[in-house]
Length: 467
Image 1 (cartoon, rainbow, N blue to C red):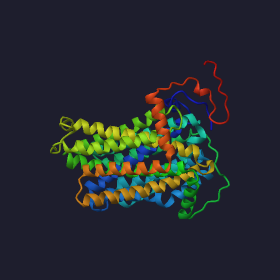
Image 2: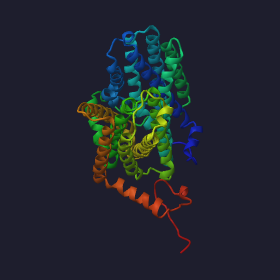
Image 3: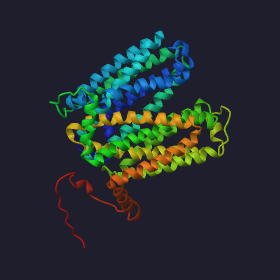
Image 4: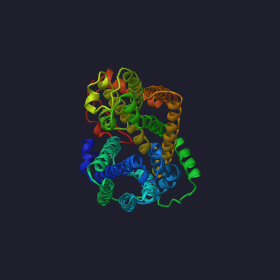
């Protein structure tokens, strides 16, 4: 751990121990989404030139290729992140990104669809390794009081980058005569910028330099889940994060058909709703540090889950009162009666999701066995991928059985409430901390002065000088 505690999470963006990693993550997330979304559009609207795959399945195929390495190789990635010095490993990963995006650029310019699909798989592999490195780097360079704010900034930056990358893909394809070539130049440029940012990342010693790699992903994943299970709060945090991916993937994959079929909007309405969702996640994540009092406050997790269920259910009721347009624009959508209720509901749902997720990541980083943080995060990535797959299968089955998208939102809200109740009964610490947080912030409004002088660990003497 390095550096002194800062007064605000935003101050981290001016410090070398955090800022380079933030920009590496931001540029990487933006690049992934420029590339994936642009290729999805090309494979959907010009299928004959890009492999001839049925346009209805192009997005699913690209998503499956990207996520496959997370399922197969996360266990190995976590071991590499714990065994190697992290700044060196991040730079090698950014070198690999330049190579992969060069392959993608050649494929896009020459309309060589095999190369582009291969690049999707390879960039998924690069992301698989980077995830454990990123989350195990933070506790090495941030003080415990900064972990919540640091995770919040990373999450906020990631979702803003996803949004900007998605928008940029459409703009590049629609603005330039040779849109594919413009995308090729953009993804290669972003990869180079990411490599430049990686050069400034400070040294981060290996957590377990003597680790012998276990190349069996099944046994390694099981071993790390067993280690996480030693602390029930850590293990249930893993499950809680994976559940968020289950819950969130239902909404993210449903926004396009919801905007088209239930609201009658065109593609600009889809982009607008994605923007609302991303900004909500970022705002909720940034708010976490303020509400937590600059510590890992898992009492915010129940608050987040309550808000997620309430506003997911409200989207169902709000959508029932909106009369669909006919390929309407964003302005036409906003003029509809009940439209602002949908916007507010989506924004608040995503904001509460941000409140929910940040403390869980911070708890894993602070409580997990220090030599296994990256491997536990890698095991979590496997669970996340599996939960996303199950969510997709469940959503497809329910929609195939006749449910509407708003009804799917209601089902997700009810399931979220049930899962939250189950987890908080298993680990009462979450619920007890939530009750304590409510009492100290709402009922009694306790105001603390000088708490920064208390040590993060070890003994302390409190002397009262007033009766």
